[in-house]
Length: 87
Image (cartoon, rainbow, N blue to C red):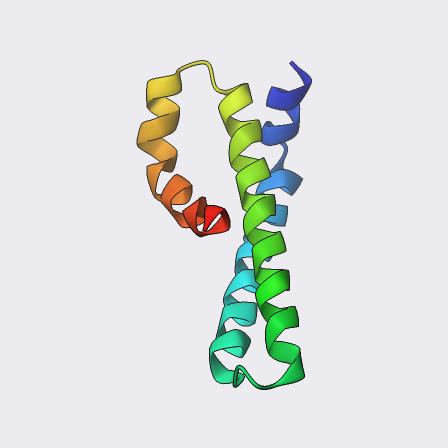
């Protein structure tokens, strides 16, 4: 399927890796920025957008997987990582 082809591309994994790096940088900035700073809310919002992109990535990987149990075994920590999106 198209989704499986998309997920299998090396560029897909590279994009996810870049999002991970960006997410870590944003988190560091968010922690270092006082809540009273006007940029704090923007940093939180940007982090939430990236977390949503991770949720989309997991949904695509789930749709492309042939074995649901294997998907859950491989990506359980990633699923936990996107749970803050639903707070």
